[in-house]
Image 1 (tube, one colour):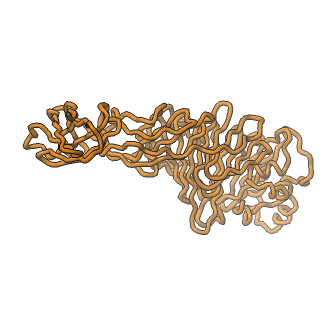
Image 2: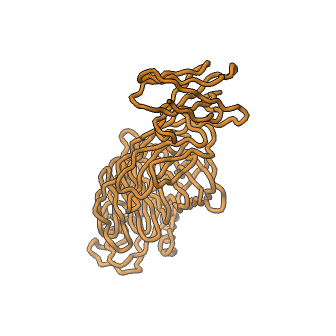
Length: 451
C-alpha cells in the first residue's frame, strides 16, 4: 500500500524519541492518540489531531491469524508485517493469541474524504436518512438498498461502484486526494451485489478492495462484480484482473473468469464466464407488444436484461430476467435507452454484457390503425398502406416470412405509404402502423399475406 510510505507511523521507541521534540500541546495530543487506542480496544477506535495524524483501528486476532496474514488482510501486502509488529511493540515472529488486540495504523489528512452519490433509484438509505443524488458518503456510513433500490457512488479518482437491490455496504477506508501517492478505497459489503469500475488519475495508482464475510477482492484497474449471498461469494471479472483472497488462499482472476468462495473453503478454480449474447432482432423502435431477441447461448440458466438511460449503465430504468432469448417490451416509458443482455450460468456467475441502443415508442390509441396489401412480381413484393390518411406524417412497414413476426424486416416510409422488397421466398406477411413521431406511433393494423 504505497500511501503508507510517507505515513507517520511510529513504533514505541521512535515515539519516545519524538516526544522530547514536541511542544507541550503536541505532547498531549500524541498521548491522547495512544491512550484512546488502548482504552477502547474492542471497537473501531479512531483518534485524530488537528493536523495530519496517525489514525488507529483495532482488530481482534482470529484463530490461525499471524502478523503477516493481518497485514495482507488490512493493507493488501503481507510485507508490511514488520511495520505492524513495530507499531504494536511486538516481534514479527511472535505467536498471536485469539482475542488479542492488534492496532492498525493509518495516516489520514484532516480533510474528510468522501464518495459522491451520482444516481439513486428506489429505496436507498444512509443510516436513518434517505439517500439522494449529490449526497456525500463518508467513511463508516452504512448504505442499504431496498428490494428495488439502486445507487452509484463516484470517487475523486474517477472510480465508480454500483450497488444493486438488497445490498449492505460501508465505505471502510478512503485515501484518494490528488496529493496522495496512491488512491486507496476499501468497501465492506456484508450482503448483496456490488459492481465496480476502477479508474485512476494519471500517475496515481489505485488500490480498490471489497471485503465480504467470506472473501476479499483486491482490484487494480478493472471492471468486476461481487455478489455476497447467504452462503457464498460470487466474483466475475470482465476487464483487467482481481486477486481473490479467501482465508489464507489467494486466487488471481484474469479477465473473462470468475470464482466462488464459500465459508471456510478455498475459492474454486477459475470458471470461464459466458460470452456476450449476439442480437437476433432489434426493432427500429419498440412499442408495447414488440420484442427484442438474441441467439440463445448454451449452458445458460437465465438471461439478465438491464435498461438504463445512460451508456455506462448507472442510471437504471428497469431490470428483467428471462429464460429464453427474447424480451417483450411492456410498460416502459417512451424514450431512448441503453440495453445490456448477459447470460447467467449454473453457478450464478454473470457473463459478458452485450450492449445496444434501443428506442421505445408510446402507442397513441386515438389514431386509427392502418391495413396493408401486398402484390408480387417475380421476387419483388410491393407493400402498400390501404387508404393512407393524408395527415399521416409517415408509416412503419414490417414484413416477415413468419406470421408471428418473430424476425421482421422494418422500414420507415413517407406518405403515400409504399415500399418494394426483394426476397427469395414464396410468401411474406405484412403489417404497418402510423409513424407520428420517432417515439409515438399507432397500433399495428391487420396482418396481410401475399398470394
